[in-house]
Amino acid sequence: MAFSFEMIEDKIEFFEAASLSVLEKKINEQIDHNKALLLEVSSVSHQMCFDPDNKKPYYSAVVHFKLKKTR
Image (tube, rainbow, N blue to C red; front, side):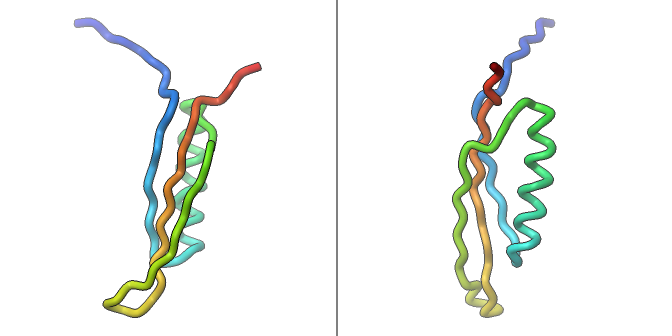
């Protein structure tokens, strides 16, 4: 059995929540997890729409993580 270890260079994650504060908390938790993989935030895109069932806003975000540049 052979193992191959490669660095993750790019990672895109999707998040959704019923409130902006919960969405922010989810993203911040994942940022902390990805620091262990030497990944940092490259870009964030977000949007809000209204849930037609309960007439409340619904938030989503896409976060692009990239390998941290070492100097």
